[in-house]
Amino acid sequence: MIENRIYNFSAGPSMLAESVLKKAQEQMLNYEGSGMSVMEMSHRSKVYDKIITDTEALFHEVMGIPDDYKVLFLAGGATGMFAAIPMNLAVKGNPDYVVTGNFAGGSFKEAKKYAPDAKAAADLTDENFVRIPQQSELKLNPDADYVHICFNNTIFGTKWNYIPETGNVPLVADMSSCILSEPVDVTKFDVIYAGAQKNIAPAGVTIVIVKKSLLGNAKPITPKIWNFATETEKDSMLNTPPCYSIYIAMLVLQWIRDEIGGLENMQKRNIKKASALYDYLDSTDFYKTTVEKNSRSMMNVVFRTGNDDLDAKFVKESQAAGMSNLKGHRLVGGMRASIYNAMPQEGVEYLIDFMKKFEAANK
Image (cartoon, rainbow, N blue to C red; front, side, top):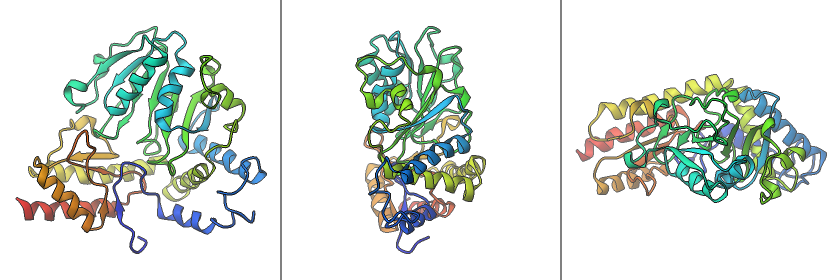
């Protein structure tokens, strides 16, 4: 690890792989002989056109995305997509939403502005979002515009352990906090979208993977920059895209392909990290996690001591020990360790060692 770098457990923006940062550093002032930084070059230049074209091709390669899907590079984050999805897909105005956390709830609330008959096919609010509903619990409308899920819930530390069956109704997934963490059968989804700042790149670019057969149904009020058909026609170049974030996404995808060996190996890495942390949490009564075992996230591990003062002490002392952003979200409290792709195994082991020492000193 680079000297003086800490272990950053932030839920986002998150840490990036050191080799990616070093490559970006090497190319900062002069990208491949262009005489300028990617930050400076025109998005209409041949040099940048190759960057964005290569990045799209890498998404297809690394994720196994079929040719009948388009990869778009947009702005506005997942929050922007909360509006863009119903604007583009809610032809009848009656999509189904599965509310499994804060962002899933936010997307449902936003959708109702543009699709007034949107309904919650399941809502885990009363259970404080400690689990993912089973297929049998989903009250799906066979005539809905689409079914929307948040595949990994960053704040509450849950993840879908299955892909819901929706029949002929398109399935839309917010994968902001788990994209590129494991292989995903893209053909089971009709739209996948993700903010970049957790597993892809710095904040700024939003990835939208959309089945081409769904294009062309946008509502008249849809802004041009969020009209999936218009952006597809322009290859995400309707206006100046988030150029530097897309460039870093290219480097990250190259890292996954060339250094990690693909998403199968990335999944093995992530399972090893998450298992080590959950195994320790399951072995002690000092720390508590309320997430049901079959709904646990590989990316966001939430836990607490049960004492708010002790939790605050944990966060303060962990910072002094060279770790950052372990404080839980304000809606949940306690602690949260976000262990995205770039978090090394050593960082998780370092956290576990600290947790053991803290437990011994504060029982």
